[in-house]
Image 1 (cartoon, rainbow, N blue to C red):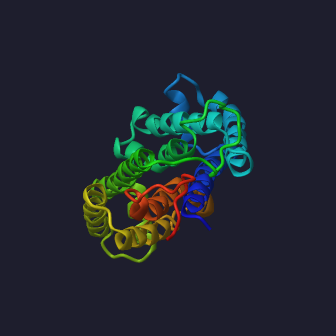
Image 2 (cartoon, rainbow, N blue to C red):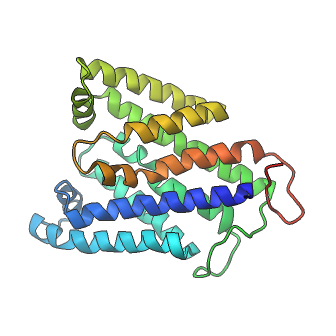
Length: 260
């Protein structure tokens, strides 16, 4: 398989996971969503009525990325992912909640940068059979570096400030001092985030991929949907791993990156 195909499918699946998982919470009618509707002046009764509709739309867009990705849908997912993440601090939650979800809008953005920016047909299928140059690859790599930095730093800050949900996770895992555990995890994640921003290394990215995918498995409720919703985080880390050694490599005559 060509390396560009691996990046294409990784980001495509990651973006789909994010919006399918997010949509599932709308159908479930997750109570905390009422706070986000309240930002627009929508009360709880109407919020609960709207949640399944918005959730279904999210799932449909996620499925469209799996089966027929277009530039228009990718652009909308970038916008919608940014809006839904921003609603958290706007509703009173800590600002790191916004940057911790960088994968939600970062994965479709990176996919759009690599395979969709040069096209003019917004509803045409986006495929990996496109010409890519060093400038495009460098832009995509920098995008993914920032995305991975933000999602790690954001989660690290939530650990340091002692987010209640994270402390509950550590307590359920048997840690005797959840606050101390959260602080140590937060320091680790912030240092890792800075390393990725300054000089990303492929072995470090593998460690962080295992860390991120593993640490998202321990939510007290709806663990599977929570894990799926973070697909943009895993996909961004893995895509940066694939892209990193090729970002400055010579472009092939047909514009494809190869493993050799």
